[in-house]
Length: 130
Image 1 (cartoon, rainbow, N blue to C red):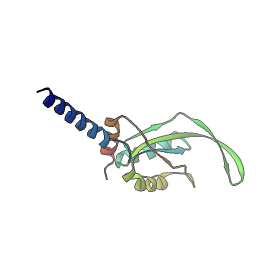
Image 2: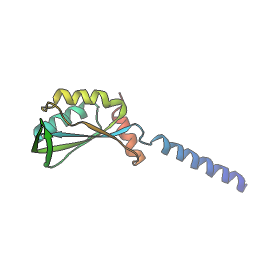
Image 3: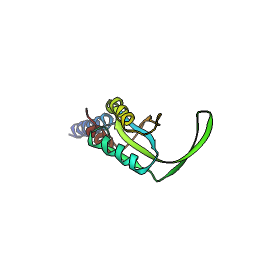
Image 4: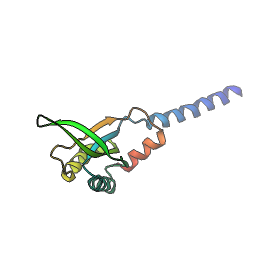
């Protein structure tokens, strides 16, 4: 009898492990995009959420960016978008940002999510299914 219980527990543990592994974030991205002001940050964020290209976007407080542009050091006050999305939504998301963004060459940097709370990762992928 104990052997049957052990097998049942191992089977349950394996099923739980499979659900966990299936939720791993191999297709989940965190994208950084800077915007010149709150208005453009909110406009781009709203469009990405409304079209299902992003699950959640954080808009930062103002940050100071220091960068080189056309061989000169520049600095500007910007807002940083932290965009949670899936790999499958990336190409369309990038095109949407390019069509809405006021910069000639906007920062769009995608970083793969290596680990995360499985339920949260599943939620991102559900929200951004194409």
